[in-house]
Length: 334
Image (cartoon, rainbow, N blue to C red; front, side):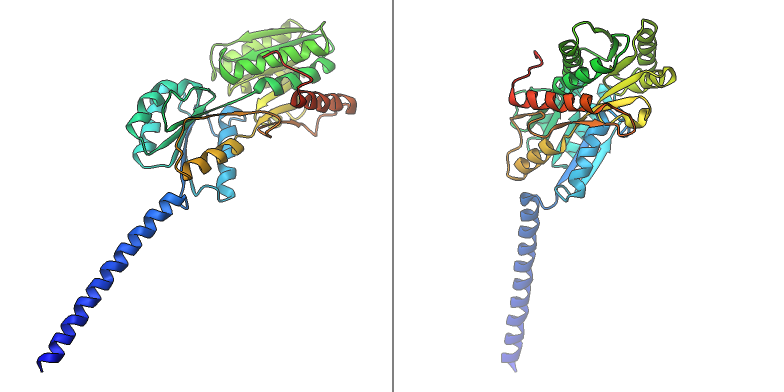
């Protein structure tokens, strides 16, 4: 009678041992899942509304495309954080929650990011538009040669103006906004040296009223074509629409802001560099590099408003300009 009891005891012990091994196996599988990136979470912190048809929408569209293609598994977005302190709190919060990649989409976010990133060495951060990674191993940065699309827009605008006066509404003289303005001016004057490109900076990325006032001022001085950068441009496009003045957009396709007046938009396609960053993070490389978008890499694109009757020869000149910028036969001076 003792033998069956011993046998049963051994069977019980073997069962417990097997369960313990199985439990360890599950832990290993979970760890492997995280390391191989099968469950990859991305958070975005951005200064304006997700549907601003400008800077913030460009990054939101990009991460949504990566999510739709299953390149990443989960996306969280905190928008409207124009106040830097609010953005910093959101960035830190996402890092504390264990997101794999935190996107700080604003050149004004460099200060808080530089303080936060060292506290979370296992989290990868990417920010822009900027070219500084602060020498930190878990920070990427990204920028865009917005002067290239600006140049193309300028070439087209110079062929459409009848008054030879074009108004530009810039936000702050930094980053991709300044590059765009400088490129636009260079393209317009390369196409027609007689064109007077009037430039006004409002000093704000988000002041819609200031943008509207600047647009009205340009029009009062004879401008029949306008362009501008940042989320504030909804103020300017509203004035352009009221006055029948043409508009050239940047950052996102701005046709919905005025189907009768928007000619073309330079569109940022951040999904390429974000996919590259995600792949690197999955491979264990958390930062230390700057990504820069150009025409050649497909990071920027000129999208025409099909509702606008643009002469074919003008559209052709735009493509010729893009080709020249890609092969180096044309330069923006930047």
